[in-house]
Every structure is written in structure tokens, then in C-alpha cells.
Image (cartoon, rainbow, N blue to C red; front, side, top):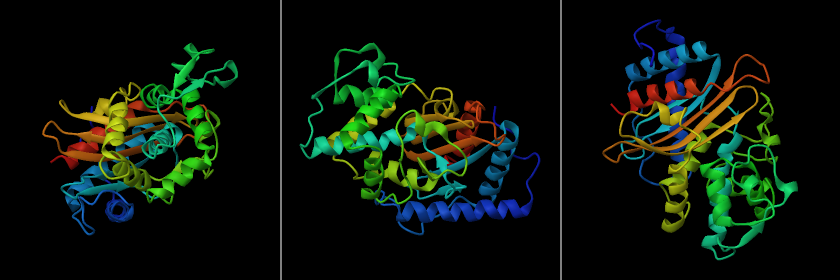
Length: 315
């Protein structure tokens, strides 16, 4: 249940901080190489709406012992909201949207056939591989590996895609190619989920991911055929039911990718659509403030933050 926004108002200094962060989000969206649907200098969420939403997010952070990083951008209406938008958070599996998009770009350039087969060996299998672990000794196509990576968050499938791309640095290179100068991938699955606070490896910012996802799902980062393929896999994801998708109003749909890691890292990022077809780019990254490496990710915090942001942005 979403907290009462009228209760426990935050101090005016923190409201000012939220307003500053909104401006940062707008700047990042305008400069991030996304589609051209929103002009620079487009309107932000109103002062009162920002204050109310900031109040809600502060309460949620205290309730769940988490820190949020949030970027929300309305590509058509031009409104935006940000919360810690330029802070670095561990990406965890949200990086796979870039990895799969990089594979699709190779297919687009006819440098790879998605029907090409890859052998699945016992030595390839790593933790959390719900599809590939059942295909040891068999072959899987790049199409199947892409689908397993985004729909089931299969870590072995993600590593096999990284292997074809040339390693984690190829994801960083791909990010730069779409105007994302913040995202960096340094390690393979599952080591990249170590998520230690202050470690810049395998991190991004909410603003950077929002701009990158916007370009790939709504913009011109891929040709129409491959953009639709990417979006279809993200819409079919089964890993965010207790996070972003649980916070959606009735009738809304999402194309998103979740990710989990140590230190209570719980992420979800993508695009959501209202029943009327209006879209919102939404990135919610979070980590525990307890400092405990084995802290569980707060799914409910992500769901409640989603509901709170959409409650403001969809008005």
C-alpha cells in the first residue's frame, strides 16, 4: 500500500534537493541520445507534486532501509522526475538489455545470424541459469540465448552473449555508441553482482540507463524489426512480478528488466505504457542502507516506489 503523502512532511531543504534532482533528470534525458520526442527545456513535474513525491520516497527509504536511484521521463508530455539520478548503483542484470541489443545490432549488420547455434557445456553453467542448465550437451541459438537472458534472467545465457561480443568491455563500448557515457561493465555473471558500495565496476546511473533504454525501446538505437524483438522479450519477462510490475496501476504494461545483487540490490528498469498507450521511461535502482552484504533486496520497496512515481507522473 502506498504511504499517505500528506503525513510526515520532509524539511524544506530536502524538498529543494528533490527539485534540483528533477532538473538533473531533465538535463540527462535531453543529452542522453534518446529519441527526439522531448525537446530540451521541457517541463518538469510541478513543485508541489515533486515535494509530495519526495516525501513519499523518503518515507519508503526509511521504511525499507534502502536508498533509491530513480529516473522517470515522459517522452511525449516532456515531464520528468529524478531522485539521486547521477549516483552510481550496481547494474546487476539490467546490463543485459545492452548486451542483447549489441547482439541484435550484429544481426542487423548481418555480422551474426540469430539462428546460429552455440554449444552448452557443463563448465559454462553458473548460478541462476534456469534455461541453459536444462540444455547441457545441446545447442541453443543466439535467439534462444537472448530470450533466456531477458525473459528468465539466465546468467549462463548472458555470459555466452558476452563471449560472442568479446567480453564485458563490449557492453561499455555499446553504451558509448548510444550516447551513454556512464554505464560500464567490467565482470561476468555472477561476479558482477557483488555490488559493493563505492566500487565503480559494473555500475550505471539512473539518468544514463533511462536515456539508453529510451533510445533502444522507443528511439532509433535499433532498426524497427530488432527494436520490436527486444521489446517483445522485455514484455515477456517473468522476473519483475514483485517489483515494478506489482506497482503498476490496473491496465498498465511494462517492457522491463530486473536485477538483483549483494547488499540488498534490487533494480528494475524499462518502459511502461498506460491503457491509452502513453509511455513512461522508468528506472528504479535500490540498495540496502544496512551495509550488510547478505541483505535481501526489498522487492516491495521497488513496487511501492513504482506506484508512487506513476501516481504523480500519470496525473
